[in-house]
Image (cartoon, rainbow, N blue to C red):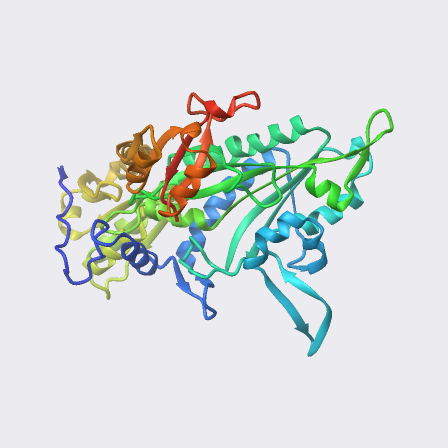
Length: 481
């Protein structure tokens, strides 16, 4: 037997989250706090990632790491502290990061002879070693990835979205030709980032390249993945950069080609961060909390003992064992000293994809109750068939979340022809129009209203090709986090 989801608590109801439609930023803060994802750290702009939030990050990290290795990159680690002089070798890079730098001038009770920068990104320190390691064309391509923390001093912090310290991966590569470098940057964009964001996290994203105004400091082209959040705002979820030969020339990364001539390497860098957790909250969450696709949920199924009863405990423990044997990540909640309603609401807040409630009344008839989190529908299922039912339900969860997010994005995306129209449409979602109708002047006009060009796409809405005329490009604009 299937029943409709419970009605939403009314405005101001005790324990209710702020409604998304009422105050989306407040709703986001409520979910992050009450789903126990993170807390503010002791220093303004820092965060403490709690076990549930870190469990989601571990699942995302594993998915990304597998794909990064399949793309041929190896993991390494580089220092947190970088000589300030390194950043000054690439003028555009240091200029782009100057406002965000944290600089150490004292250590061990003494003034340092040379200040050191706390890593904002690792292009400079990694390239100083690339210059040592690369001598011949036989050393290329060199494909390195690093899992680390970085510090970018944030004036307006928001947990996961903008913090002074965050976790991420950053890839850095060197190639013999620009074509190879460009192809690899796009491979990361599609085979690693797009594959994880859409295929694992079930968040629809658009891809394109940034305008000159918005691209990464020191890059010749920045490719981006842009998601639309539940309030219609854009979130930059990951970027992959063509660096050209800018850093190679600054750091002397040269190799002898097959004819023995000295050439500068062509490079890429790319990264995604714990911001992905914020994206999942805002893209999939509802007025009851977080909703997680099974692939990234620390727990896929929670089995709740409704009441303290010996037979119920045995049935619940047996069901947990069967679910684990079927390959699911399962948690048994038998804390009957805590009210059942309180526990079920807590798991709903955390976004566990499926919940099985085992109580004496259902069990007397050989049944249990299954609740799917994405639609909050309760179904009475036979105890003996619960594993099959749960497996089937989990199999459709990600697709349902994807379809809902994609429909919401489509409803908030509008094709326009002028900057004036883009200002109106971009305040509510994505507006698309010819880049030739915008240009740098139009981009400035949009920026004054806190609307930015999220990316430029080819005439067919896909990635622009090298041969595409700039006048044929399409701009996607909107407000952003």
